[in-house]
Image (cartoon, rainbow, N blue to C red; front, side, top):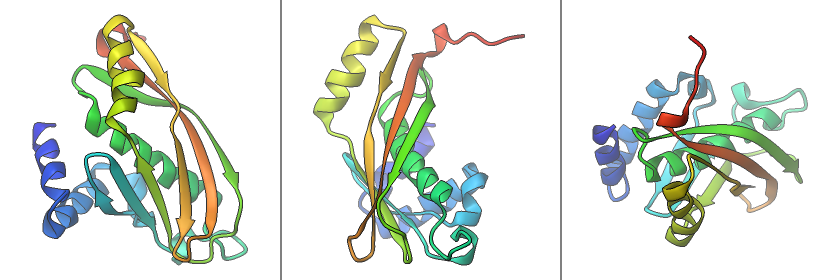
Length: 169
């Protein structure tokens, strides 16, 4: 995980390392590979992921598929959250997802998500000092290339200390 964190850090300021990071993510999350989601920007507080307008992402009326839009929203928020918490100490799992659709996507779309240090401190790190698990509920908006507001997704992520995770044996 430390190696991946190093690559993410390099990808914040280098087009080459952003390309490397994208190719790693296509292998690490093979479910997303056919969609060709592409991280176009990653900083300490922001991420932008492109979902291309291509045949494998289209629905029956030639718009981007609703489930693909939900998936790119989940990908952006999950990737940003997991890059901020220590995955060796905490498990991140999505509990629920709701999406409101406003406009039919007939071109590339971009999922843009920001995560401030204040939010992390107040909503994640402080509560985790005294609780085994917390929930965070980020919202993410998706826009097309012409800045039409395509949809807004709300996710509920559970962040849980690994010591509190119970599994059936």
